[in-house]
Length: 192
Image (cartoon, rainbow, N blue to C red; front, side, top):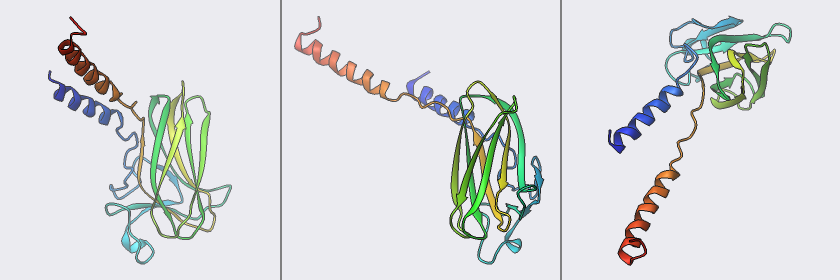
């Protein structure tokens, strides 16, 4: 196997390691298949505020109005993942300024990590990235909750994945430098 084939294989393996752990995260099935929800629905252009559209595709998820004791949410059980980190990327918007989005990564032992983000602009899609540390625990559930009782939150392109470690590309630099040094050293008589 040549170097180019090996690098291509490494890229393929990395992409497969970073596959989305959530199903129907783009809501393009036209419903909330695979998601447990309360006060949430899939919406398309006629259901959205005038001039606003899904981030990609035809559908988005709307987390409706909720109250603190009964918030609007979606959640999904994922195949348990044993990793040191979990990354969740969400495209989010709100029908007003300063809506709160609460995200939870729950572990199999019942513990969880909660992160709250504020959506700052009205009807503007924002990419929100959540990084969860999951050392030694299996992630089993991801939940997204509207924490604003008088504001709607819209979600699209929800992706959860385990980031693969960065390949140490600097090794190639060291190898190339070593080869050049060996050739020059041989020419100069430093290496016999």
